[in-house]
Length: 157
Image (cartoon, rainbow, N blue to C red; front, side, top):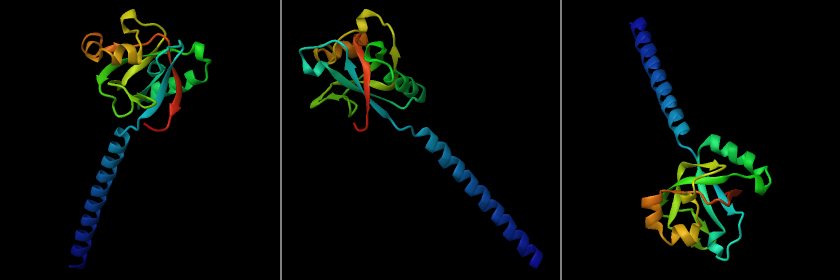
């Protein structure tokens, strides 16, 4: 009887250990899938008389892109690449310039740094994209202001 009791306890401990192991693995996998967004202010190399055209905010959780951005931030402004991204409706809760919230944002993780793009993607954040959001979202679908560059990392939305 004592041997049988030991076997039951051992099998229950083994089962409990397996359950704990599976739960730990599941939690670990989900933790890796939850990527925290990093936010960056995009500046413009060319001056505009409209202050809302001077910057906008982008977000990414793409580690490779974040490494590229960190390298870009070490370069002089004139040597930094422009941003090119797929447009989405709404500000995303973060795309703004001071008090102005934009009517669009780059889809997170669907943007990149580029040395050159086609001219149709060039424009200004407020005077072009915000002023004709429907056209940009439905027809052009991407935005790559030629004078843009990553100005700095920002800590909050």
